[in-house]
Length: 132
Image 1 (cartoon, one colour):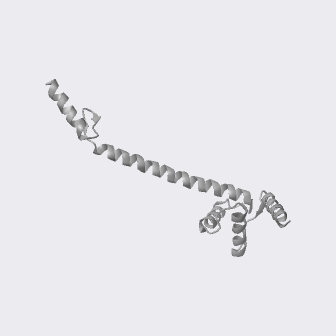
Image 2 (cartoon, rainbow, N blue to C red):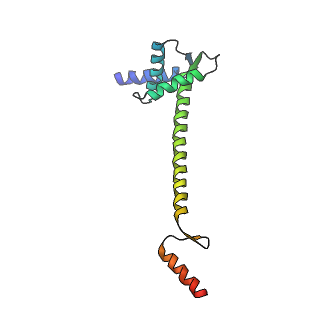
Image 3 (cartoon, rainbow, N blue to C red):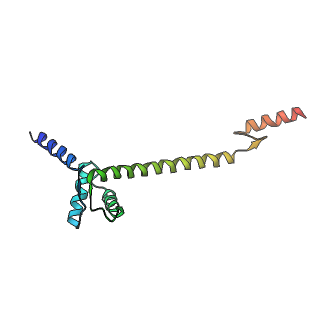
């Protein structure tokens, strides 16, 4: 029975999250506000980065905004996390490409072709000797 009541309360909270609520005006209100968003949308509770993200979002709202939905915060937070992950993936790919280009630049080049090992180099010199 308690499980059913807990689920009903959660669904009610999720429904209420679609409607605008006042932005926090004090530290206790902000703590309750941020905790409710983090709990409601299952963000990690031990990460202060999410609280920082909520505070930054409030600061970046237009000066005429005094209320917004908690659902809006969750959407913005998920988008910010996705942007951060995508940024790190792009940086990783750039580093891999740069390393591959550096490794390719270290390989010897004969007649515009990369030579991977000494055997190909010897084979090329034998072919050059046969042509002359």
